[in-house]
Image 1 (tube, rainbow, N blue to C red):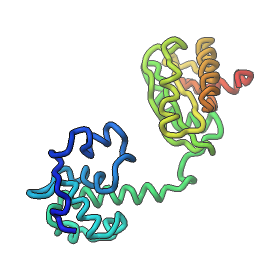
Image 2 (image 1 turned 45 degrees about the horizontal axis):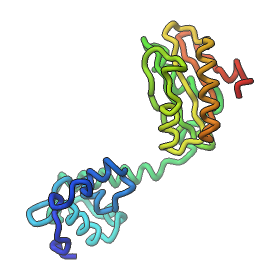
Image 3 (image 1 turned 90 degrees about the horizontal axis):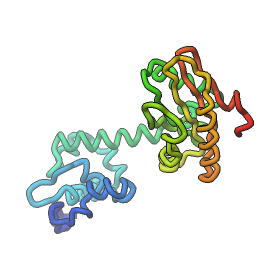
Image 4 (image 1 turned 180 degrees about the vertical axis):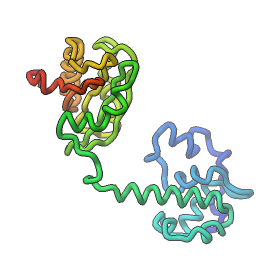
Length: 233
């Protein structure tokens, strides 16, 4: 594929259709391979846009797999690439390779309140303000990620269920665990904590997202609202 076979430049494309802007507005899944590589390249060269160079790389090395296999010097030698761009491409490909090798057994499985405390207590027990975090779990209770949402005084009127479940929907979680701390050090749940839990459980049922537990962290330990108030579930 000749470098002049694609006759547009990035600046000639309508702004909303440029790769970086499309990624920001539509997400990375909306971009094709060449557009994603173009974002890594950032800029093209005289007579060829970053998108053109990306298309040429995919053609020259036949696929994304070819970019993984090609040596660093070979990639550097491509017209319009050079050491800096080659390093960015190889680093991105390697991150993708490592991500693909993560096995489920390497992820933490949450099966008890103690498992939750092991994940968050070190950081949360010493916080000077109340914070509410949400642990996202898959259908086998593997810990996917922790989202830190609220800081300050927490009650059912200040905590919006839509915010609690937003990332769970975004990352296709099956279960969530609510965690917040008591700066006083006493992890005993207040009536307001129990009420908030009830509200979130009911909201989760509507969204088909299971609230697995609500854990409260203090310097004196932790408590599980599910263990103390199983009738809520």
